[in-house]
Amino acid sequence: MKSIAIYCGSSLGNDPKIVADAAELGKKLAEENITVIYGGARIGIMGTVANTALKHEGKVIGVIPEFLKRKEVVHTELTELHTTETMVERKMKMIDMAEGFIALPGGFGTLEELFEVITALQLAQMEHPVAILNSNGYYDQLIAMMQTMMQKELLKPKNFDMLIIETDIQILLERMRNFVPKTTPKWLKTN
Ligand code: AMP
Image (cartoon, rainbow, N blue to C red; front, side):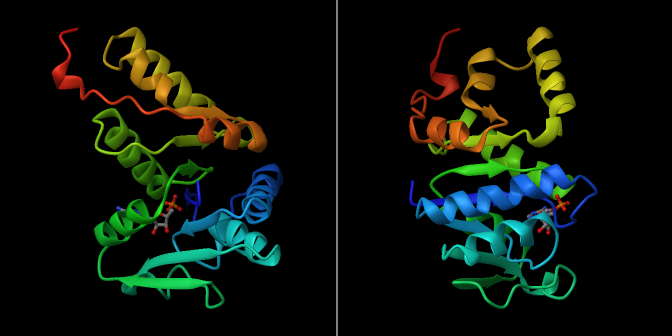
């Protein structure tokens, strides 16, 4: 994996452990020579990941729509900054450039981006690993919801199993490296 897209909050939140994990991830990606692809903001958890990666001489590519440059306070010291017209173009560009995806804690925007790549993986439209860094149990209730979805047989366990969920960054990256995509689209199977 030469590049990973990071989905995370444009706000900083109020949990120091989450911010510390975001910083640790930025540092680790820089040390492992993995380019960070992210939303291009200087603020929030997004900014924390980018700044720590840059501080450790990592490469960071931001992708931001023109209209959000002020609201999300665009980062001006990135390795590369791509400007798009729309949110949809931003997401597509990030997906095109990344060889893996990690969601850190965030809000609606983060969840939207995360579920877009999970469903692309489920439909075999995309073959890169998708991971959740469950920092300080932030996503426990979301994972519990996925258990309910499986109990009600609306989510297939094999699709859930493709999602990498970890609290430890090193283990998460190791699992991403070893990820083997499923190759058969679901509509070709009989069960
Ligand atoms: P949030 O998790 O809500 O703080 O948002 C995290 C990032 O996702 C921010 O950079 C948002 O601009 C971005 N975002 C929110 N909604 C969308 C969307 N529909 N498409 C692409 N990016 C989005």
